[in-house]
Every structure is written in C-alpha cells, then in structure tokens.
Image (cartoon, rainbow, N blue to C red; front, side, top):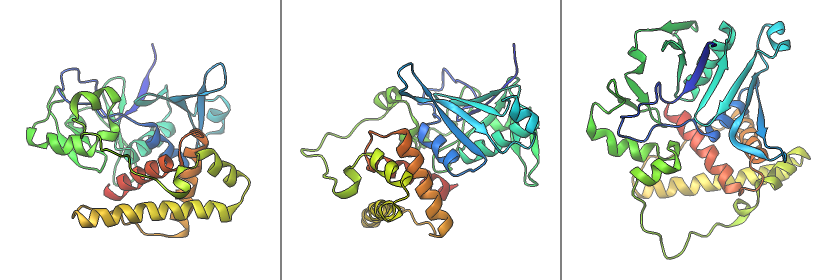
Length: 283
C-alpha cells in the first residue's frame, strides 16, 4: 500500500452520475507543461519507440529540494484522465495544487481529502467534502452535483454537454451528444494549416524564426476568422492581450504539441492552443 495524490477533473468515478465524466486531456497537460518552465514532460513510448498517446511523465524540475530531485521523487505520472504521485512531499503537493487550479481539476489524496492553495498562497487540506460538491467545466463554469455525481440542476445539462464536449471520452461523445448530419462537403482548409506539425517543429528547432512567425500568423488569421463568425452569430469571441510573453507562450505551446504529434496537421495544434486560451480566458 502507498499514499497517492491525484489530479483529476472528477473527484470520484461516479458510476451512477448519468452524465459523461470530465477527462483530463493530453492537450490540457501539454498546455500547462509548455508554459511552466519548472515542469518538463517525457512521453511514454512503446517498444518501437512510438509515443503512447495520453501517457507520460511530468517532472517537477523546479523542486527546491535537490535530494528529492536526485532520488527522482519529483515525478508525476500522467495516464488517461489523471496525473498522480506516490508519497509526494509538501512541495510536490503544492505544485500539484497549482497545476490542478490551472486545469480546473481537483487534487485528491487517498483518504478523500482535497488539497488547494488559499488566497495567501499557502497549501491547505480540506477533508470536509465541501470541495467535491461541484465540478468545473472547460470555460470555468461551476456545476453543482450531489453525492452520486448527478446534477442538482438538470437544466444545466445542455450547457454542460456543449461546453465540455472536447473533455469527454469518444465513447461518451457518441453516447450523449447527437452529432449534426454530415455536410455534403467538408470545409476546405488553406495555407500552412494543412502542413504537418513536424514541419513546424523542425523549423522551430532549426531556429528559422521567420518561418515560425509565418506559422503563428496563420494561427492569428485562424482565430480572427473564428471571431468574425462568432460575432455574426452573436457568440463570445476569443480576445486576449498580445505581448512578447503571450507570443512566447503560444509558440512554445505550438512547438510542444507539434513535437508530440508530428503527423497531425498544424491546424490541430492551433485548435489545441485555442482550447487552452479559451479555458484561461474564461477562468
């Protein structure tokens, strides 16, 4: 037996919740690691050296105790849906609480205690269960749930399904969400969005920054187009301040995603970055 602490979108498995449970997706994990210099990510690979999707190791390289680092006890394990650590010290638990807040997750110990950081920046433990009376959606909206994980207000179900569809398993998407009839023709994608992520990653590694910025300009055009459509349908647009720091974060994220998904299109990297920015913008 050991003592595990887990970062998870759902505090418990909720077998009778009657709704799709929120998952911790690989895109979300990449977003946190790529924008936090105190963290590093190592993908799990099969015997042929191919990355296994949704599995890897997150290393807290900024852990202040060098002995802990040397013993490799600054490690978090990422498996589908959760990030966990065995026998973490207080420094690692506090870092997990920081990660959990960014990912809209609970940080839960084996004894059903919740860990979080208070307004003073201190690590706090709560064993009352009060923290588990709600879940947090992708855009930061809270949904109150009962002791079986069911919605207290059933009128919130449509919003919940619409907001969080990217955080459900494919099985739950097929079960709970009715897909729209396929159009006669798939939308045509033009320009750098159709290139493979590996091309962007190689350009970044070769420090061909003019090319990297061309790719980033395509991303800006992509979100601009979405904002125009959102405005036409009176939906909320994505507007976030631009600065050198934001630019660096965005490009770092696009590189991390592209490196991990070399055969995917650059459009998929832009979509992942858009989801991350939407989540941060709404939190």
